[in-house]
Every structure is written in C-alpha cells, then in structure tokens.
Image 1 (tube, helix red, strand yellow):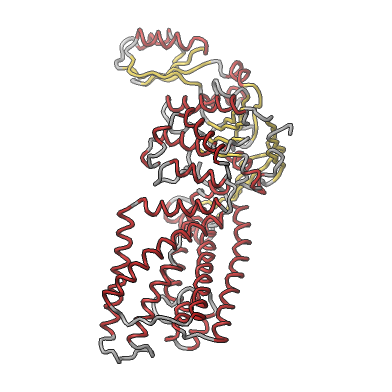
Image 2 (tube, rainbow over the protein chains, first blue to last red):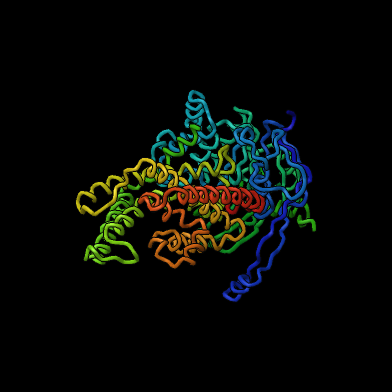
Length: 328
Length: 267
C-alpha cells in the first residue's frame, strides 16, 4: 500500500431546510419548507502517505470536519473518489473500521455514568482485541496520557481535559492505522492543549499511525504537523510544508496583554505594532523570532495583568496568502 | 458474538448505576399494580358482575397479564435511536465495527431481562399479599405459543421504534412528537393495553387487527388465557411473523436511504 489516504475531486453537497427567524418563519417552514443546497466541498484532492501527520486547517465551516466524516465513512460523497487504505469508507467494511479511529472534540463516545474503564472494556469486545494486546495497549496509553488514577471514576465526574484524554485512550486501544482527529483541543485550557499535542506527536512517532488532524487554531500545528493543508469554503488553498507557510505568510505572532493602568500606553509602539488598543486589552504584532524578547520587555516595563503569545488567526493567514481566499 | 455479550453487560450496569432512580422505578411499578388492582376490584365489587362479557376473575387476570406483557414488550431501550440520529451521536456507532441494529437489540434484551427479574419478584410478592383471582395457564402447548407470541411482539415493537427513530434523518425536529404520538397514543389505544380489543364493535376490531399493534399486548395475553386456539392461533402467529418480515424489510430500505442523507450534526 503506497498511499494511506487518497481523495480525488471530492464534492459534497447538503440539502438543508431554511427557516426564517421568528414565529412566522416557523409556521412558514411547516407549510412550505424552503430547501437550499449547500456545497461543503467543491472538488478537493490530496493524498497522504502511511505514517504522515497532516494538519487540516481552515476557518469554521471550511469543510474540514466534512472531509474527515467522509473519510471515516459517515457521510456519503456526492461526487469524486475516496480511498482509505484501499477501502471505500462508505461501505463501512468491519475490517476497515477496525483499522481507523475518529475522535471528535465535541462528541463523547464514553458511557457517561460509568467509569471510563468500562467503555475501554466494551471497545475491547467491539474491536475484538486479544486480551494480552489490550492490556499492553492500555498500559502504554495510560502511561502516555497520565490517566492511571482516573480509570475508575465515573466519566461525568471528570474535567474536560481528563475526559479528552479518556476519549483518546478509548479511540486508540485497537491501535488504528489511520487516526482522524477533529478539533481535539477545543475547549481545553492551554496546558491541557499542549499535553494533547505532545501526545499526538509521540503517538505518531512511536507507532507510525497516519494522522489527520483538523483545527481552526494555528497553535495546534506548531511543532506538530510538518505538512499542512489549508481549506477554505470547500476548496484547498494550500498543501505543503508547514515551515514554508509560516515563513511566507505568518511571519508574525500576536502578543495579547491585559494592562492594569493606562500609564505610558503610547510607549507600547516601541515593542511592536499595535493591532488593537482598547484599555485594558491590547494586541501587538511582533516578528516571530522576536516574540519572546518582546513579551519579556512588555512584562518588565508595563503593568501587565495577563499575557499570551499566539499565532495569528488562520483567517488572516488565508487573507495574506490568498488575498481574500474565498476564490469565488 | 462476545461483543454483544459485553454490550448486554454494560447496559445492565448503566441501569443500576443510578441506585435511587432504579429503586423509585421499581416502587412506581409496584404502586401501579396496587392501584390497578384496587380500581378494578372496586368496579367489580360485586363478583358476579359482568361488563363487556368479562367478569371479575377474567378482568383481573387480563389486567395482571397486561402488566407482565407490557414489562416484557414495551420496555425498550430502542426508543433512544431517534435521539442518536437527531443529535448526531449515531456517528460514534457508525464508525465502529459493530452492527447498529444488533447493538440496540442487545440493549433492549438487557433492559427487558432486568425488568423481568424484578417484575417477577414483585409479582410474586404482590400475589401473596393481594391474592387476586389469577388464572394460571397449565397447558404446555399454550405456554409455548404464548412465548412465541411474546418474542414476536418484542420484535415488532423493536422494529416500530427503529422506524420512528429513522424519521429524524429527514425531519430532526419532529422526533419527539412523532415518537409520543405513536408510542403513547396509538400503541396504548390499539395494542390492547388499556382495554381488551374484543369489547369493540366488529368493524373496529377488524380494522385494528389489520395493524401490527394488537400483536404487541392483546394477542399474547389472549393466547395465554387460552382464548385463541387452533387455526385462529396459527393464523395469528403467522400474521405476527409477517409483520416482523414487512417491518424489517421496510426498515432496511428506510435506514439505507437515511444514512445517505445523514448529516452527522455536531462536532
């Protein structure tokens, strides 16, 4: 098998019923519902080699999640060709399903009222994992994710970060060859996000699983994905090395700070370009390499209550790279 | 096969996870039996009184019989299918190497098994306390026919629930409404759950007997009471089997179409 994932001219259309706002709208939609066709994917093509870690990035509604859902067999392609490990995902062959895993940041697969270990045991049965293999896999995952003490706690009592780690464990017990991660860090605090990213990196290095990761947050890709595919409005705008994207179109980072008083506020210009200033919030843009220095200067010379360093939003990268990006 | 045993086990555990919920549920059941018994005992306070051709013994047997049959047939986890479809939780199941129908059937069986265990205990205890005039079937052939009709009833209800659960593929909003309409209104009225079907005028009876609903409660109970025998029994079972066949085929068609239209909301 030379390519793990092949997508050729994939088109996906949805039919949705439009409802005008308000009560009149509701009544109208009962009597004569207005249907609209939404094109989520407008003919995308790409291929992924076994063991690659690819970041799929784009604004909300760009089509990333739709792509993952088609690749895992959940949605039916309107047009085009899709092949994952030489299976047609839509046929949902059990042999295919045993080798993939889909983790959606917003969707739980864990049984809510029972300890996570019960869902793990259930998955062992569903995926027909031999007992010895299951114990080994579980042990490794527990170690990598640090969840040993939480195995017997009912899932509803876990924090979001802990639950996410449990979800990942449940999804990886059967050592899938292809892993689809949809917004795995959404809603998590910064530390939890980094833990998840570290884990994904380690997992990819250690087991050579093909990983397709979606996000609308550029931070998810830094130090993680070597290759990134930018998708916007159902089209692929960029497919290549992450480094190149950064050097060309994301030369800057953003420093967001919250100040406790307004003294010397005009002096902020010395540190970086002021993108937004409405006391107490200030957003500065600084060259990537100077970000750490600029941040420390800011902390030393100004009354800072809170500070974060972030990547510029993907929308801006797209705007810069493709001058408007929607390509209509 | 082992995977379904596991689903059975975890279903059991989930129901017992909320201890108080469970205890209250059983308490409610017992209370319901008490109330029904006293209601009908009062209506038939004169033991020789006959209403619609049923005397006290017969109506109390019918009432208690319904309770047991209801516990077996109408307690079904499969009512959550519509919710899975509307919310997009279905996606979690589709992505696993597991048959979704078999999954729900296993969960149903687990729920019914749990129900049966407790209902039997409660029935035994109440029987000793209330000593209702209940008719115990002794004919082995009848008992066998009764068991077959119960299994068919469970299958029919399962398929009906699954079909209702498929509606959200096309119209997510009416999921609850349509479910309520069918299970609470139609099933209660036409299944023999509220009253024996044969107290209705002939014309109405024939119409109702052409639907699958009376095969859920009325038919099994009458079989148990020995009121339907011979060719009528054989014919009835055949009709029930046909309903299973028809509904199953229909479900498969609807489900395939539904999956194509499925939008997998959320996440």
